[in-house]
Length: 510
Image (cartoon, rainbow, N blue to C red; front, side, top):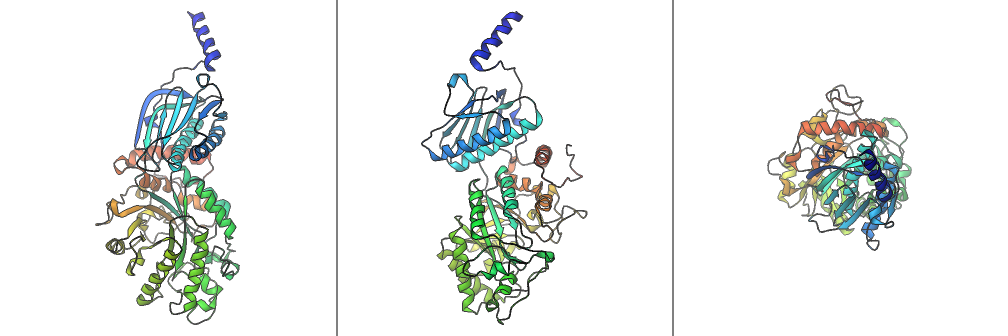
């Protein structure tokens, strides 16, 4: 009998590469974040072998692009080669990429059995979201076991909201291209698809405007605390946009106006009503600056800024800020927003702004970003706008976790990991329901942070919760089961050397 078993295994080596042991697996217990709509396990294993073959239609550019990404990631995570459309099918394990019809572009299906992995989607973005799930599978397999296999079963998935965002303030403190790219990589891993860059404020102007060069040559020199600031050239910005696009993340640029404009006023005195040059500012108080609505040059300035940035930003939205304009009287503010939205529309973008912009005659394609005033948000809806949910007391990543937090502020609230996860955008404000909401965004203001390690402390692990709020069905979200998955992702973040906040209220693994 032993001789027969040995012969059987030897034949398997000859015909199927090696003899595989039977392993019981549990795909449904896999700690995917965001949690998938459907996970059905079949209890066996797909063994990862060298020279697994990836099959796809080489004439389809979406599939070709997906195949190249999958090959790179697969080989990096498994140390096994992945062949593209070569080899004899019955001698190798295989992966197939197949275009199928889905209702949503980001929807996908992954079917894993003993000999094959089949990934289906209707669009390149759907295939990419599928790859992030495969990426998490591979990373956890690598962390938790010496056995090279994936659990078998089916994952079917699609996002709740089309917009799932994170905002990074690069104006209070400047973050380098490399730091922003590192952030983008982590956003992509958790299926976040928009990066909102806050590119101007009182403390610094961070993007080159060729027709107004002093904005960065002078206005880009400062930041909170008096340290040297910085800025992105247009080539560097285009590189960031392309890097994000390659990960199916859309960059949303923000120029915060008419308030939060001291860096511009210090760079060009003609933008001030009194014509005097403002001093560079390195504090954190707000509400003292304003562009001069009565000056014709103000709108020429805005036209140039919006034109140049729009030309190098392929996304749908241009964010005009509009918050905390405490030094602009109400009449001037309304005139200003009305004129500015016409400029944005002229350059082919839709207006996004903080919820205060609803006081003007906003256009129906406008998105009001709810952060503080529920009446503003509902007022925007009455004017035909949509809402992006970023309530400061639940979703602001710069809020401290508790009174002992190393970084952050707490003017809105202390936001523990549980508080950041345990809210429902569809039910937060009376009158604002799912049909009115384009999505959720977690802003990270940078008054108290100046490098990626400090950024990571505030953003992680809370950002994973916002990713799940934006992607997963509300009925699937529950704190106790999420916490169990989050603990596993703590191990994953540790493996990537991400310095996240180790809340004492969560039993992290070492």
